[in-house]
Image (cartoon, helix red, strand yellow):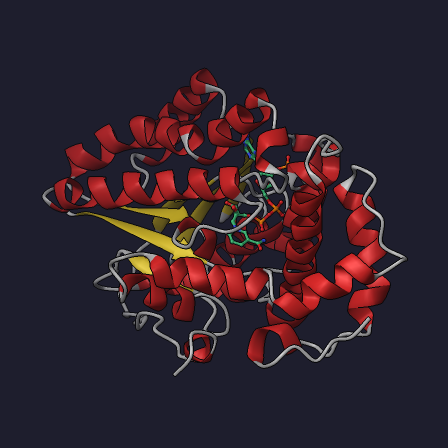
Length: 354
Ligand SMILES: NC(=O)c1ccc[n+]([C@@H]2O[C@H](COP(=O)([O-])OP(=O)(O)OC[C@H]3O[C@@H](n4cnc5c(N)ncnc54)[C@H](OP(=O)(O)O)[C@@H]3O)[C@@H](O)[C@H]2O)c1
């Protein structure tokens, strides 16, 4: 079976819901939108089993969550302000919840920041900002929560990683590295924490239909890529096309991911890793793990992101010009993408022609 063929084979770990009753106190970061919001709502609706502290860095954004959770607001769901980059705020909130509830049973580290760009054009401060949320934010949360969990000999840490946290992905290098760091942190902590009956789980979604892509730094802040060489700019366009196509054809909804997170929390014997999307991720991860040289993983990404026919089309297309802004590049690609057979680049020979 070819590399792309194997990608549809699900290796998602089995998820068991056990019937254990009792209210778990759950703290979730980044609940203003997307996966965090959906997870907070789905758990809070299960009032017998969960009490949720849903946090967000900007409380002005809380109305979407308030509306979604409706009558459970103030009962099984409490909204609190929390920027995971602020250590003092993290420590204060964790203490407050522990005082109020006596414990935190489950921590869901969901807050995340994307970054898509040409690697050599990324200012160091921008990369540091991404790590400050995606990696150091999780570290701050863990440092605050683990002493209590260790003392009670009980707890579950759920870190929202990504398929990109296992398979390095072109033009997402810094984001990918931040999620690799998260994977390494989680895997390294897990054996020690098991000695305290604290379990660690990594959730590895593929594309999810949230505002994550729009929020990704490259698109939002328009990092200047005009100094990048022409070939790299062409490759970026091909990669953006692939990313857009993935979102169009293979995305999950945040609700789907949230319900998997709920099942993981309820699992009697949770695993370390869960791939949430059988259409995107398991094949890549399997290809990587089955080849210790690492060559297969690189070939897979090269073939997926830069198929020759797409590169030719981009080079010869007169209506695509890269002027230094990826947002423009993506917008310019949309009409071209619309004419592409959905998923054609992913599942078979390239059928798209300029
Ligand atoms: N969407 C995908 O395709 C995808 C795929 C794989 C993994 N993931 C991961 O899933 C997680 C959730 O992303 P999403 O898709 O739901 O995207 P999203 O809709 O953009 O949500 C990201 C959330 O993180 C919050 N956040 C960012 N920086 C923060 C900080 N310093 N402190 C506290 N909160 C912060 C955002 O708050 P603001 O509203 O204030 O910005 C927002 O609530 C992320 O860890 C992401 O890496 C997403």
